[in-house]
Amino acid sequence: MSPSLLEVRELSIGFAAARGVVSAVERLSFDIAPGETLALVGESGCGKTVTGLSLMGLLPSARIGGSARLAGQEVLGLTPRQRRKHRGAPIAMVFQDPLTSLNPVMTIGAQLVEAIRADRPVSRREAADYALHLLERVRIPAPRQRLGEYPHRLSGGMRQRVVIALALAQRPALLIADEPTTALDVTIQAQILQLLLELKNENGMALLLITHDLAVVSETADRVLVMRHGQAVEEQPVIPFFEAPRHPYSRGLIAARPQPRPRFGPRPRLPELVDSGEFAG
Amino acid sequence: MLEIQGLDVDYRSHGGTVRAVRGVDLAVGRGETLGLVGESGCGKSSLARAVMRLTDVARGAIRIDGIDIARLKGRALLPYRRKLQMVFQDSASSLDPRFDMTRIIEEPLRTTQANGAARARRVASLMDQVGLAASLKDRYPHELSGGQRQRAAIARALACGPELLVLDEPVSALDVSLQAQVLNLLVDLQQEYKLAYLFVSHDIGVVQHMADRVAVMYLGRIVETGTHADVLAAPAHPYTQALLAAVPVISPRTHRIANRPVVTGELPSPLNPPTGCAFHPRCPLVQARCRHAVPQLRVAGEGRAVACHLHETSQVSSLCLQEGLVPA
Image (tube, rainbow over all chains, first blue to last red):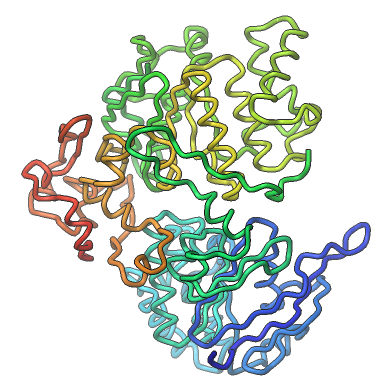
């Protein structure tokens, strides 16, 4: 295996609750190589999103244990100031809902310039030129015109392209994409997934794709890590994962997807997972 | 039992009139599931809401057992309200947060059943049918999971003994394991009560599983209809082909999105729709006449209709899919 870009070891995340601590992630370990796409999959509440947030330092009140090293440097427990100074191999994140990730009262151009100037000391003019370049790279039509527009003017797919451009402004070594296409239509989803994979290949960037959609995983990932109740249940390269899943929960997840019904005859019954995480009645 | 003819739904906005649904003809037979697919903004929810008379019909007819309800008002609609019920996508906002389960499911019965004890028995039997434990009857929506809430919404829809359910993205907000449970429940209920379903969804996988027949919508119009096997296994319209090519598939050896041509562009604004065929700016097979003439939905084989100029001269075949769509 190639040397890791990200090494997560025994990551635990807990939240203080009225009585004791609620554990969201328990002793999770995984690696991502440069240029690799690792899919973190599981159902709502399995801990996949908080794993991503912890790597970004976006869980200030959580109790976080273990370690996560990016290119050898610890990223857990950094203060915001240390994190900003942390040059060389930053992590950027793209969220599910692009509208809440964008500032509604700043133009697209102003948001990009801010992100670029936070990354490195360049003049406004240089930053503006680079902002245009980033919009071109994420293939937004009429990029020059978009610079002066506000997020509400854009479609969901265009907004997600802007969010990806903002992430690229920091020249990340690792991009965490948390359900980046879940809110999008299927043709736009295909376009955004292709864009993410292309950008990854151009830059040698690694991608941590957080999703509940196993078909998206099958279409994009190099490796798959399944989480359930805060723990890893299975990790495999993508082909063996889908052809020979080892854990019964993984098999259940794959089988529970709706199947095309046969031309004639009855509809196949979908296998139902027991203990799906629904609250006990 | 449901027959829609020449249906138009218009919305007025600052920018002018949005023609959300244009000239839609559809029929749903007793006990049948018609899957209505399309992307956001294509008008599928407007169509569903018009059938329920939740939004005004601009032109056209909606016939229930032969009676046009498109322009009925108030009391005259009541007998048909009983026959048509709807389940919405977001169970958190479609259930009253101040009502407990009993009250939610009982609510539609209040118009027809004055006897409280009889209503309570009916509620208990409905909860049992949709797989909700009797112990949940005093719970409020926020105390239930998404799957349980959607079961309650289905129980409420069944309360008056409807003949047709309009299901607008009924499982889109659920995790895959809960999705499977709710889909199985809908299949069971359909068989037991011979219910007709108008199943609206953007999720081709779910429609593939549920529908007997499929209608594909693009910018307010139906572009293709046919049996589930015809439309989804051998799509004829270039939009249907593009849509299906974009659907992610579990087959990591053969289906990798990075290696597959994908349709470019986005759904045009319904405020300013393209001339001619609405799909022409994105269509890889566009020809001159597509830019000015609107293609009509024409019969193309048994139980199948397609609205595409190229199809009239059979230049489009499913071969186009296999060869891959050429990005425009």
